[in-house]
Image (tube, rainbow, N blue to C red; front, side, top):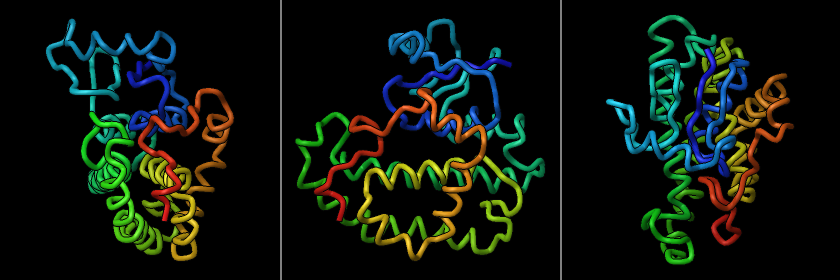
Length: 235
């Protein structure tokens, strides 16, 4: 099956978690807005020709299915491409971890937009400074610590033990994005979270992921996505 991924063409954002899974799987896909422009997303959001209309990108067209929400897309894709074990318990656990990643991602985003996405960062700088200080001082260590403890319990180096999964790809993306957004804070936390750093490096060295990261298909981190680097927020 050749998939169609609908997401904004100039940022990694939530769509990047899906891109990484598709790239690791070697699946054929079209990154629609990058090929046809952002306007290609609009008809789907307006519900043209659809009964079940997605709320917002990313969403994935797979045959007659239109699947929205990042964690939902990954839960559907993963068993079809060997990115999660077949057993129900493992699949539910992986989905639970992915939902935790989703919570973490929202908190990272809200460091620079704590008041709301409709306002520019410059309109909420005092609130951002307070939110970012709490994130780097309390929430970031809590999330990193949680996944570090899980990795310590598993003996295979991956979050599900010896089985590589889409959650490992998502953890790679979180570490990469946080290193871009908060390099000072991540450097301070690195000694306490060696397994997370090692997982990031192992994912980056996987042949298909390494090829993707070196290709123009990988959109660079920038000041328009979820992970943004504002030095004044990196304490």
